[in-house]
Image: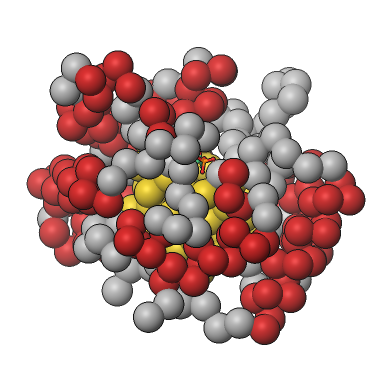
Length: 253
Ligand code: 13P
């Protein structure tokens, strides 16, 4: 059965003291509560080693928010897959819409990063999703198809099984406007069908597809109850344990 996951993307938030405090709160929560899903966080790169120290038994999976498409060398400001591997990070987000929007990342670059992450034993969380204009123009199915195919379809079946996909409609990120569970489900099913058409249903059924975009304590349970939604990638609501823990509990019976 595919993994259920709640992942927090902290984006560019929190100073070192606040980051450590939230990690320790999350550790206590994990130690005291059985959860029905894996819990992952993607803190700013500066705090990754601290996160590894806090979650030293792997209670929470530690991810970077991005990684370089290059292996090593003169790439100022970048962090490499090797560096992430060397701290035993679990993986990296790849192709988040904010990377696409503010750093002009393309699906072709994401393809290189996804492959590199897999080669280094890291889990790529490949993010895709349409903009508001694309949805209004009825292009969302095609946009997500192209994104998925361009970034992932050079992988072998064994490789793609290790990828986690996060569908994050850009219009729902940080806006308070959430895709309805039905809107999210139909795109998740669409992504799974695209993968099934190329790799077979068995492969597609193994891939966890997370929803991201204004997931909150009051809508998580309904979103997670959809058959093709395997969890969430949480932004704003991951910054407070009170909210994040309630979202994790969206997987409780
Ligand atoms: P919000 O939950 O703040 O909308 O952010 C979603 C997101 O971008 C997670 O990667």
